[in-house]
Length: 117
Image (cartoon, rainbow, N blue to C red; front, side, top):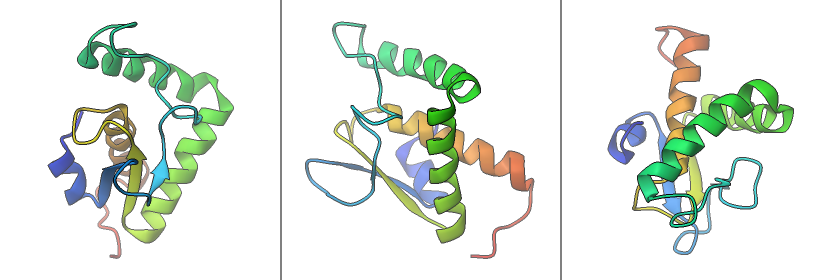
């Protein structure tokens, strides 16, 4: 999982929904929201790891999750930057899992090509 600093280098910003109202909201109850809760389902690190597994499986099996992920990736690639919004920032967050997957997807689909921006 990439750090917030590393993600900013790719033009992906994550903000706290309570502080900043811009960006694509990826928290509960959105399609990409983390279904696992801190304390009930484990520590912050454990629920992020559970989310990573859930997200990976959902990209393969859940059309809504896959379509929303691809929509966000498309916007990011088109605009060159994007903000994801959740309530966790600046603490570790499932949005980092989404953003890291976006970087992986861009490299997978565009290879080593430099983007035109």
